[in-house]
Length: 519
Image (cartoon, rainbow, N blue to C red; front, side, top):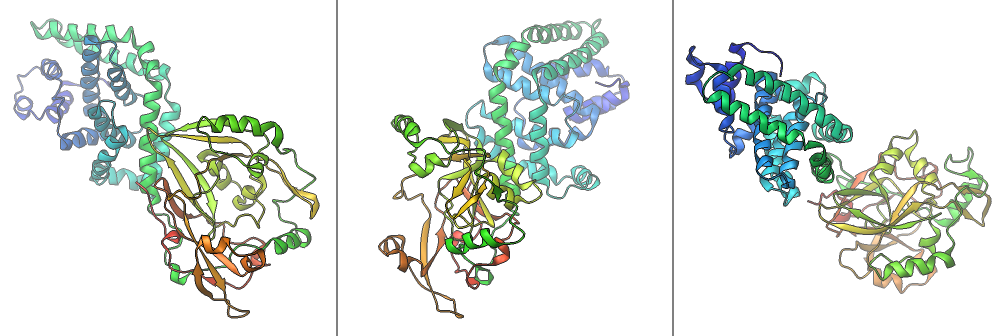
């Protein structure tokens, strides 16, 4: 706590205790007032409105520090009563995070609201607690002082900005930094104790509180390290929830009646263009690639053993799409991405992590990076959109993950797709009602390439290859409760500037083409 005179301290205490009479009484010993207020824990059962006010005063440095000292003493009292209370250690860490110097005042205020709701949850239903905090976070952000801050720092998409800032805080926080913040707070407390140590009753209680804090400090390293995973989970849940609201401003196809696309690139046209197009697409490389496909016979037995334990099955193509791979469990909250087009299934096998998706989006040519390093031929999958799969808090998803193998094909003996980026594969049964519904539209003739009456997947499956070529598949609906989208990639919808494709096709009004967010 910065050194403050009695008048500043009086103002801070009046704000935090709402005790105006003591503020107006010039004979009141401000330091005695402070310790009397702290002993009462400043009302642990604060209303939601009071929590927001507490968070708002993070913009007022001295007042903010008074609150931090109050919370630190309250945390330490609980841990002194029960050192084994893991949630007590979580609460202490949440307080110490607010004392770390690099946490900005606005971010700290937002975190205070989230942390207050999480503390109330007591370790259960963190996602529900974070959800409940969102309305009050928005209330906080609407306050004049917060709006002024956002304007000054030119923050436009506030939820995206907050998610990024909070993720940065999470990645920087280490036990050593929390302990250093704890020590700084102890020095502040020592100063405050000395202000009242000779006052009867109050001085004794102040010294007792200080001894309690020191007792907890002596055990703090082990206690803090024991709850690291829980703290990470809290941060991840907050970030995912903020990003969920940020996604509300991102859309795929806004008005499907006015959008046209060119469908999937036929295989023959794709091969011809890859062989003849000048200049050659940057996602094509010379040779056979550095990431040979996994050995199917060797890996099939291992896969079958893990399938018995609940991992998804992999066919020959799935196994050989990897260079090497391993069974893994993704524990929520976590997020995966899948690149799609209007004729792609949202719920299908191949996904990428958030880290890989961001690397691709930040590359000079994202579409080329996706095709090159995930090894996706243009006739296999279109692009232009992406969907998000959220593994929700408390959920565990069994997957296969590893670097994608290089892809070669007989028609292009000297060219390949490099592969090497990590892919994630999981699937559900085709008859699972969480799968997408696809409709297959018969194309009209020649220059009038309109879509005629559609048929179902089952009807389409009965057609021979020649008949299937007369139809284009379009995603009618996305049904998986964990999948949000589609969103625009910003890459456009075609390769080769649209060459090799039929005329533009009007996209029907279907829910599977309109952005939807899953809760």
